[in-house]
Structures are given as structure tokens and as C-alpha cells.
Image (cartoon, rainbow, N blue to C red; front, top):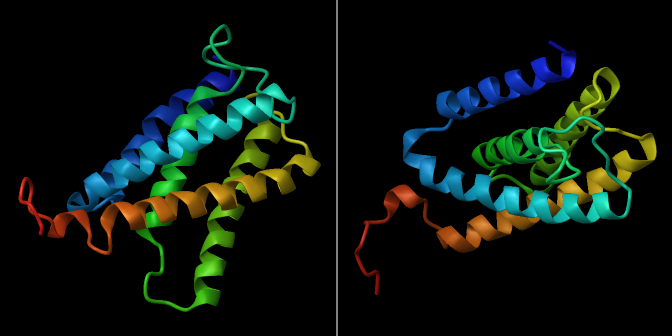
Length: 166
């Protein structure tokens, strides 16, 4: 088994287990919304970047269907977005929130760099890391705004299913 296959299998085991272990049950629906919305954003950005040659994945799960790495784009990055949302400092100052964005974007970039250096799952060029940092900052910001809009200031656990809230 190649290093790439081992990483892909580990990705499909470890990241879902992290989600099951660390996401509180009362926030499952909120985190599913984060996960799916971030997958949508990742898909849009990745397809565009791949089309223009700014992103490449020499080894892919579905080489005839897409030129992006499915597991990294649809499991790893959305999982990072879930943990970004879970640990978001709601009632902290602006500086603390900016550092929160920087921390999670840095964690994603570090993962990309390590995977790019140790496997052929993605090609990571130093110049593209700056572009990726901008992309992930925008994606996390959009995801955060979407969840704020979706929740309208209340967590899902405070809502009554099927009750009109007029």
C-alpha cells in the first residue's frame, strides 16, 4: 500500500471519529450545516482553481470525474471548518477573533504543506500558500456569516422543531 492510500484511509477513519468524539450532540445540526456549506465553498473554489492551473492533485480518488482530491477537499477542510465554528470566540474581542481566523487558516495551510511535501495527494507551491490563505480566510468568513444568519442568534438546540416562532 502506498503512502497516499494510507493517508486517504486514515483521513476517512480519523476525521469522522474526531467529529463524532468532539462535536457536542446538541450542536450536531449546526455542525452539519457548517460541514455541508464549507464543502460547497470548497467545491466552488477548488474547481475554479484547478481549471486555471493554480491547484493540482497528481493522485486522486476519482481521476475521471474531477481533478481535485476528494478526501482532502470534502473531509479534511470541512472538518477544520467545524472545529473553527465550535471554538469560535463568540464573546471575545475583535483581536481574539482575528487570531482565531489566523490560527485555523494556519492549521489548514500547515496540513496542506505537510501533505504536499510527504505525498503526491496535492501539489503545494510556496506562492500558492498565500493565495490559499486568502481563500480559506474568505471561506471561513463566509461560512461563519452563513451560520450566524442561519441561527439568527440562537443555537439549534434552543429551537423547537416544527413550532412557528412568530
